[in-house]
Image (cartoon, rainbow, N blue to C red; front, side, top):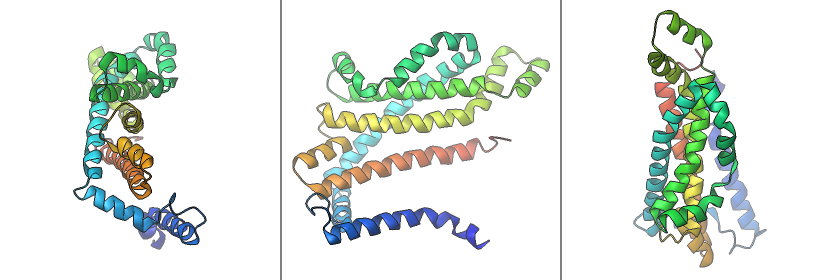
Length: 253
């Protein structure tokens, strides 16, 4: 019983351990303090940057781009995944193309999207959406194809139409795998957005903040931006987990 009450606090142990090691390394100066500032200096830069500083604006811009890319990916990827997953023949015929582009690093697509959309938010959002679409589509199709056969058979025996089976049974059965795709998709979208902000002529965003601080050798600010990006990624993943537990609580039952 005691161990159960302590369970929610277990992740804090890792955080405390990381901060302790980080503080000890900087205190002993095993790494040049210019290259690795102390946790206090880093969190001070984080607080200053988020409290009315440029880091807060950069954070919001990255959130906007990531959310837009994920929304576009979900609107396109989920319906396509349902359609492809409902017909194994159709999916197998397109499997190579899907896996090929899913395995292609999204960063390799930057030149193509720059030609199509130019330098701006459209390029960053579209290339991130492209990468996330394939991840979401794959997971949704996989979830539909692996829907429980007994429930599908029961629906058909009771006279449900193909369209009704598709949306009332297959869609619900695929929701757990769909949320896996959404979590992976939003994580990939964030990675692509941050990389794009570094290298595609961006004037704002966390990627730009990291790159600019590194160029100016402002190490506390650079680590603060990296930490902010990590918190954002963790927060987005946690958000989808909470939504999944709220609306897909019947998973596995």
